Image (tube, rainbow, N blue to C red):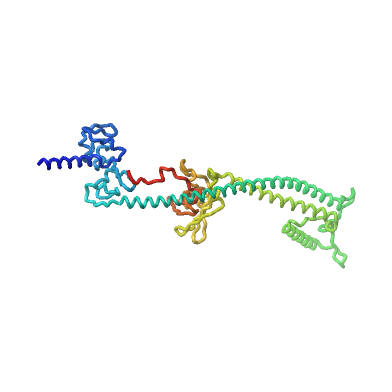
Length: 428
């Protein structure tokens, strides 16, 4: 008789001990040491200790029922030895579904839960090791790319300095050519004036061939008025035809005064003026192109390429992926496009700025000011950057109308992980 009583007492003690600690993590175990009373963790209420885990919610914070589903705001702690421990909502305790990999949440249900924590832990650790391997490879590659980027940066700076020096020299040449053009045109006017001096005072100038009286050859009789009109129209048309030819060949010097074509001084002056105009025009065009190239290079050098300019590696490169019957192309720091099978290309956004969170501002690229959607907003794209041993677009999608999302994997996005995130808790 005494033996059975002793066994019953021991069983009851074990039952009470298991009941009171079920669903509790080690960090909270101190609150559940067996006493005559239990103080709710929020301090709102003091209850008899027997009411802990009795399947009735007494505390407002649900702390008296960590191992049951009685409190709607309570949490159950999955120990999950061999895998990651975590909390689940108390409402999922004994609901017939195995939420904890060790099956501890279904201690009083019809569910037959197998303990899969060890397999899950092994799989997660293998995945973590693979991620760490890729991270180490990416970090090694990133260091090489940072060094290459530093060389590219120095080359771009030297290129800009050279272009600015060329621009200064070209500006001096432009001043010289403008002066030369002015002098050449002045000499041309002097040559024309010398070839055709003004008539002495009182002397009539030559008669206009259009308004002069024209005699019929062999007849010695003046032409009739109608004949004069016909002849005038013919000459006017010939002049107009000649003017059209001059307009089609703007480089041909326009000489309206008769007899100047054979004057060597006039021809030399006209050719000199023509050469001066052409040289000035050519140099002005070259200066404009040079200034445009300088502005583009200055804009590129003004971009934030990261703390070590590591993202300079992506400048001038483009990456493509095919999805949903479209070819998507991203050219970092430039633009994102979408091309259909028919060959129609649509701009999905131009480079705008970095858009990552404060802890990793270089984790997201923003591309705005794309082509407008039909009855929708202007297209834009956000590109998420992730660590990888090579550079490639992993996926693309359209989470909302005319707004696109991409993931670009690249070594320059690799960052050393904090020590706290490198391991997996396999034991408690």
